[in-house]
Structure formats: C-alpha cells, structure tokens
Image (tube, rainbow, N blue to C red; front, side):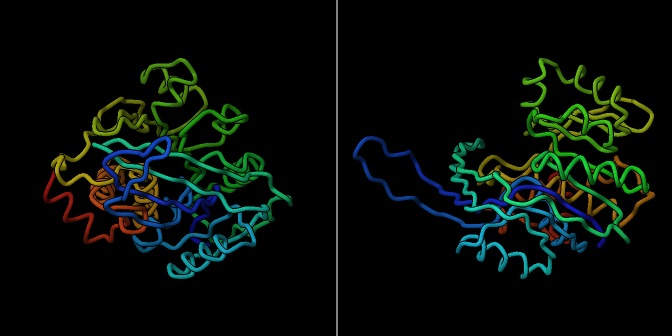
Length: 294
C-alpha cells in the first residue's frame, strides 16, 4: 500500500444543458458523462492516473452501480476495501458558466464497522471527512507512525475539530470558512492552532491562499485557462488533492510550493473536460497545462 484514501463512493452523472426543465417540460442535454465520484474517491483515482496507485476504503453497495464502480477501480488497478451500505450513492451535476449545481442521493448508513487494514508501506493518508470513525482511527494511526496525513475540508462534520489535531496538510474550502464563521486568515490561524503544518483555503478561479512550514501566508493563483475552454469545474478540487499527494509520493523531500504548483496544473486540465474520469490528467498533461497557462 503506497497511500490510503478514505471516503464515500458516488456515481456521478454530469449533464451539459442550456436550462433545467420544470413542471411538465422536457429538454435534451447537449452532452453527458458517467463516472466515479466523491471527494476522496476522485482524488484517489487522480493519484492513480499520475502513477501512484492508492488503496481506497469506501462505501460499497451490492447493486449494479456498485459493480460498475468496482469495474472502474479495476481499470486503474486500485484495491478497494469496502464498507457495505444498502444502496449506491448518486450525484447529478449540471455545470453552467464556470459554476456547477449538484443534487445528491446518499446512503451513508454503514452496515458494518470499518475494516482493519495493514498500513505497512503506506506513505500518505488522504481523507475528506466521510466515515468519520474510520477517518479518525486511521489519522491517529498514521500520526503515530509518521505517515503524512491530508484532509480535504470541504465542509463541517461532527468530528472536524478533533480530526484536525491529527492532520499534517489541511486544504479546506470556502464553505468550511462560512460554516465556522471565519474569514480565510482566521481559518489559517485555526489550522495552525490545531497543529496542521501546511494549511490553505481554495478559492476557485482565485486560486488558493495558504501557509507553508514557516507559517508564511502566500497566494497560489489559479492558472489562467481561457473561459471558452472551461467545460466542467466539478471535481477540480478533488483532482488538486490527488495531484499534490502524487507529487509528494514522487518527491517526499520536495517543497509544498512545488507540489501545489503541480496540482494546480492538474486542476487546469480537469476543468477542460466533462466528468471526473475524462478530467484525470497524466504527468504529461500537467506539464502541458503549466507550460500553456502559467
């Protein structure tokens, strides 16, 4: 096991449409994509595409969508450690003018405890807060053994504050700032107070405000992808997380400045493609994005 990602499995259905029908109206979408979804899940697939295949601990239902997901994981040679639920979770995503509306149906009523995994050889753990019991257990275990811990803080969860105490790299969304009544600087002060060595707040097209090991706050601008090339921003943050984990695994002694620069190239690729799978870049794709838009 090179890395462990823990999250919730979704099957994403992404539709490009001029408008949403209402009442008794009907409409025809211009394009669509069906792919794996979920924050940590998409990050794990991105890491695999970039050459570092992780293990994934995630929800899994014994239904046709669950079997579809296993087929997707097998394509990337990802080992899935399932935690059983009754029904697969779905996301319907409608990108529009650089934004995206999302409607989700989720089953997170886990039927069994999380599995006990052997962390031998593991060098990084990435969480998105789903499966809060498993997330906290493995964050503690990894902290005790010196394995890097990373958190995608997309929203406030029941044990977010406790979990933060075991996180090395915390990159959070503006939504978490709003839920905790903090501005970006206040959030970074909070992350420092919880012992996060690296912390940041992602801000979409404005890039990311973050601090390094010295505590210095700096801005990482997003790459300037032309507006007419932006197709689907959903999943861009997840790809960013997966890419910086891949960059760390490739060069553990490298700077986080460099890891994040690499990751923003991966995000720039994602937003130009419809759906999560089409938006997973190779290392060559990332290099091309950086050369074109830096």
